[in-house]
Length: 307
Ligand code: FDA
Image 1: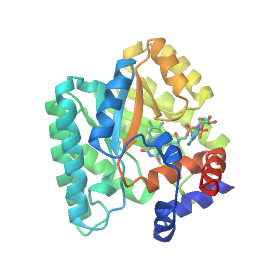
Image 2: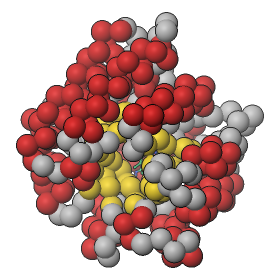
Image 3: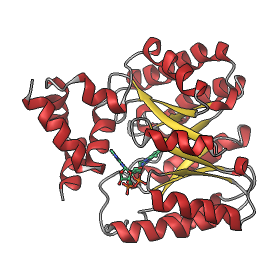
Image 4: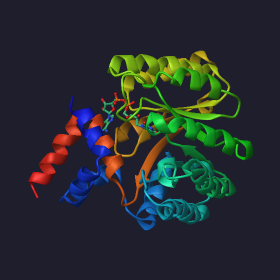
């Protein structure tokens, strides 16, 4: 029951101010967000790719309130791309972006977010990689899918995320499972009402399998975003039944969660991509990680008390 409370707090400005200013031990935040600057993150990119892992990079931040912040978000990604270009890693390191960080919720936000994300997609393509649009709360998704469709006209490899907990997702998966598409399926990390989303874990897990089957049997490239051991073996079985080779789908997990499993899947020959977040505006991202696992909250609370 703690999860929904933490998710509500993740959208509260008051809680953001309180927690961001609290003496949170660096260790707790670092587990999920291993750096604040590009200088911090480039060695981590080198270390993880050196272990045979692939990455999708997230400059943390969301729900910005001014066009200047949206431009700064765009520039942060451009700087990152410029810094990793000499490493020559191509699509081993792609980008994940949240359109709310690119201005989607501001006046004229749809156009603004598209205008801000396009140069990032162009810069990524210029170094042989691509961008995936993260899925945020359900009210933002029609705009996200429209931006995705627009970007795909010039950059067909642009990916997007769909969330198994939403009732709409099976239909979205059918629409998106076309040749050349790249779709990451996740369970969903936002607090959504019962009118639009399954609320029970077993219902979400069943929906995940239904949607995954659509993606695996489709013509696109499925990206399985989950740490759930049951879903990972089901994914392997569905891929086998669909006749997919190891490089015709990939697993994705978050930095700091089940790290041994990242290495195990990579050693088995799977493409294993680690979602690696960095930056200073870590509050929303961090709170969603706490909400996913109450044990994280106990660890976090202990670290605050022991300060
Ligand atoms: P589940 O929550 O059932 O966890 C399975 C097991 O994984 C747990 O038993 C535990 O061992 C471990 N685990 C999971 N979360 C943990 C945590 N926070 N701390 C410690 N252990 C944990 N969501 C979204 O709405 N939009 C998006 O764009 C994305 N993007 C995204 C990218 C990638 C690569 C991943 C892996 C996930 C996302 N998510 C997301 C988050 C996703 O919706 C979901 O909240 C988390 O992945 C947790 O769900 P699992 O599928 O891992 O299962």
